[in-house]
Image (cartoon, rainbow, N blue to C red):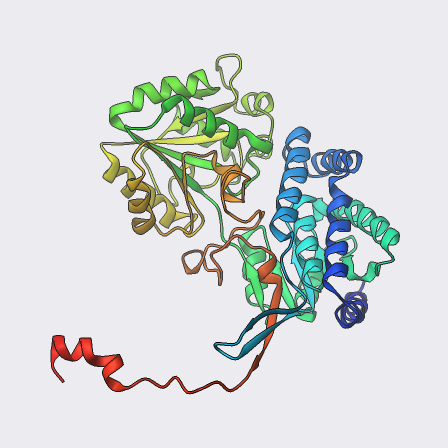
Length: 461
């Protein structure tokens, strides 16, 4: 497909979007979003998409993909239910300002192979909810999954007489040139995935909402419920074979409970492997992550690393002290491999966590297992992070949960720490803008005394 065809796809999307907005209503936007959600949530299609994702990407596992497709989509639908994204969304007589929701236009969504169904579905729902059209640019391994997802979306659209040109994709074979042309031609970019993709999105000349790298570190302090912490870390670390950017990569354990926590990990599927050099050699055999280990089931990971570990091992924990580019275990591993650090006390654990985040993953998120809630505020002001997840399974909590208040999302902004313009979970609000009508109101001009009296009293006039 030539780049001219990319222009044709975007042109059709622009026509469809202009009509969608001009003839829109809140009911229409909501119905289109529901159609896209049911396209992936209908159980038989969900399973097919999960199986196709694992088959074509070689990443993750089917049961967890099914759970992710279902819960992430259900959560997004819960978040947007009742949200006003069409017409007048606020009218304040005190300020004289009436705010009218407006679409952003045609969205280019760059999506990763780690979540080739859930991430594009999330983006499609948010785009439609806010009056946009969207064009998906999947990773090469994610093309088949994106094609199948769009077939299902269009089948649902046919039931409600919605325009299929509102949801399109870059057809195979994908290329950097096609993705670049798409990003330059659209009105907004949402980029999730590799930092190369994020950089290209943020330098394409089109407004971009992009996310930073993950490399989650969690602290287990001396007050924590160790078995609860170990089980939550296991559940999170192993979910979908650690494909999530919110999967724990390092745990920093306070000395006073180190031995007890190692025992708790062992009771909950985590095997301590004290062979740092050997694991590094096998995990990065040629300087790149071993594809036989990345996002694989436990048995395949154990075989690829040639390990002798107890039966029932779900992940391995490797003690280390090094942090930085010369110490690969301190970075993201995309596998059931967890790095373990020891710290003399909580303050030292915070310092280790800060150094890890400054090496990789700044702005994303950190975790804390503790009975002392005040320590969360210490982390929140000492670490370059957008989220501090307290006493929760990190993967499930960071991207939104029915047991916390975070918006459901598969894309976590990392703020200026991670080189992003946003530090929230990317959600429907990032897919809309507004026009404000400003009317005159009685003057509110203050006197100088009202502004400066406290300062004059303190410093003189």
